[in-house]
Image 1 (spheres, rainbow, N blue to C red):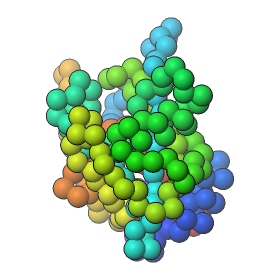
Image 2: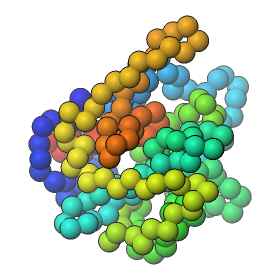
Image 3: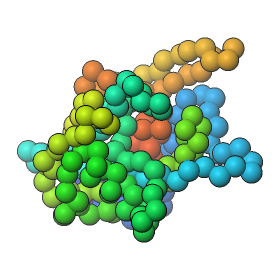
Image 4: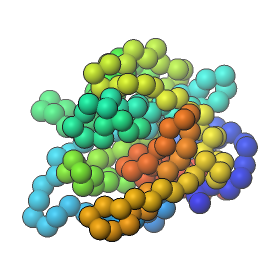
Length: 212
């Protein structure tokens, strides 16, 4: 879909260059969104604001992304693969700070040296009534992860170039309230990345792919 067959690694310089380009927004998001899916909150409602971090770091000369596998006992998104992040709290001076704070808390890492490169397009999450604001960030090295077991069942660390391979993309179908729902996903590390995480990832990959 968003990425041609290409085994070449993306560099830090390319990530920085991509984040200076105009965001593709919904045109990229819909490529990995469940169908049907609302992209806007109900009229007159005020979603909770949240921030998530698309965190990249080098391992062995290759940029990696980190995802969390959520515990199965959570109220929302149980068992799903997610970017680290969470809801805005009083005291957060920005949603980027929310994303950094939540990432520190979930992954048990220091924010020292982590550079926020910029935002992606905000995304409404119907099931939790959140408006999620994603931010792309770079760490100079692999963080010393100590994930909170109450929030993280497993860490999923994936080389960024993995997502150049279109063979990892697939679709599931399920029935919901009498309608067939098509759910695109990325299959990595024995997990399926779908829903909001896949939608956010699709826009980021589209930005990188726009570099040519």
